[in-house]
Length: 587
Image (cartoon, rainbow, N blue to C red; front, side, top):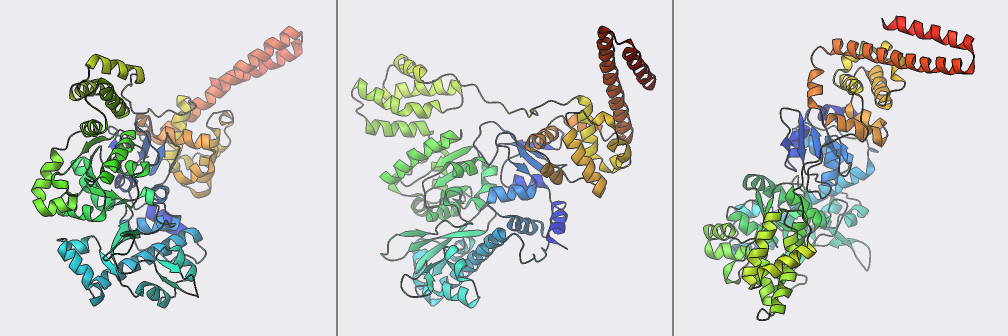
């Protein structure tokens, strides 16, 4: 079986709704086969992303991304086609045939890099339990992290002697791939390569589907930096990845929240306390792409960064980015100056849960920051504090909530409420609650054309029996959906079936969007096409022909009038005879 034949078999074996539903929350629309959600590919506050279960495709009417299940995986995971097919085959439990050597070289390279990372992860895990890993095991024991938890998070150790590079070389890995993987470095003097990570406790970094794509390494001595992270590679983009998201997303769906911490050990400590919905950014400040990943799984976020000055500054920056995506934010400030992992170890899981549950809203935390930053004894200082808080208040989605917070802040900061409201109204206009985007094609089609397109797409076997009639039907020449119908009929005529992705791929962008919009609306029309489709197709063709003849008759009447005005009676009589013949056909 060729790779492309396998692609069709695999696509027909999976449910696109279930696959996409692993990466984002989808809402079923009534009793239809359509689902809707917030697009994972661009920031939006109203859902414009649709998935159609029957035709196995998705479409976003905000950013125009769309396609089949392979396209979705390629976009969401940053994969090539071969990798996406391999990942989907693994999810479905279907053995994948070996690809041809020249098949999708860029995708094959990414797959090879991912394989190297899986080999590296296994190597680091094995080294942890050798003599070389004794110091790392002692460190984990000191931190209260047992073997079971270490294995759950795939922790390992990179030995000081650089064994990974030698392992790759024994396996015949190409030198160019060694360097591109980010796991090995080229020597400055002399030939050869050496390990990037040496004598470090290793934390594998996974993509959302649970594949190792990078590492973080913590030194156990005085080496700098304390944490060394993988560089960006074709399979690892730091700004897009959240540590532990593949573990956290199920817990986030159940609880409706995500806990955001700073470091790898914090994630592991909080996870050990029973809070499974915990993630961290990977050695970078929080980015909008990471926030959108959170929003795909939860509406609420509890920010629980370290209590030091750097952690407080990071919390303040993160709040602004989280607010841009309209997330509900609370800030957990743990007592005793402890970070999350330390607090869990010192006080236990129940105490940590309690602190999470009583975490205040972000504006109360920001207000405390303002009180510490500005001179609160003077009216001017208190107004400066309010102006510091104003941008965050303005980002609250609900008008009544914004006004309520303004009043609360006035009381908290001991500022006259009227003065604060005046300031607020000057800088903030009313904002209406966003509503879901109604999907409408850019150009509207007559009802008859919409029914015909749906019959062609949902019942290609029936349409095949009327192919001669359809291909020779003059009435189709002037319809708005001609390009869609022509392409669909050609595919059915050639293969006896219709592949939606193949059809979309043949159409100009405007027609592809029109086709997707038709599938994302008017489900009742689709359901009606299942009631004797052959009879509906005949009635549709008869009506199209009748409408076409009526248009032609009207055009002839206009020509008759023109001929009479010119005094060309012979031409007028000829045209009148043509009109009468058309009239006889319509009876």
